[in-house]
Length: 199
Image (cartoon, rainbow, N blue to C red; front, side, top):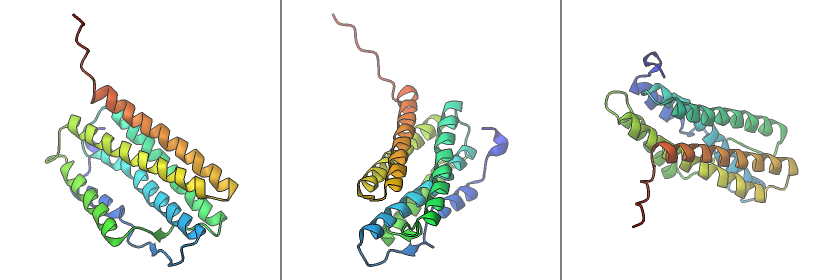
């Protein structure tokens, strides 16, 4: 990333605020299978929307090309999945992506985490490049692991064959992106010390 692409911390705070889905509809009281799955699709959509914007972190500091490539790939898939879910919501009337299944305090907590992260990674007051990349890769790996498991448990519950196939494909893609992030972590941030020679 070049210095000309950096954004002020205020823009990052706005990006964190955009991750909050406070304008989404509340979950209906009925606990049917399709409502439960729509809660899952709504979570997938909200998280894909956040991943779609994750490339904004590349405007904060200078970073390695490999880190840039990994984050760009994750962000690209977030945008792709977001569009797929919007299409599914149009094509399948029983699928909703506009619910807010999280409790209010969980929603506020996620916003607070995003805001704190934005402040800590601000260009002038944040962490060093190495710590910045390591911390974000750990966060990305955890998020991708979470998403792959969400897709897996939804696929196990989804009765529609086409939607089940979609969820299983999304699970595989999230696993591959998780492995990509973890691979970079292991190569650049968690190198093991060479084993001591045997006496």
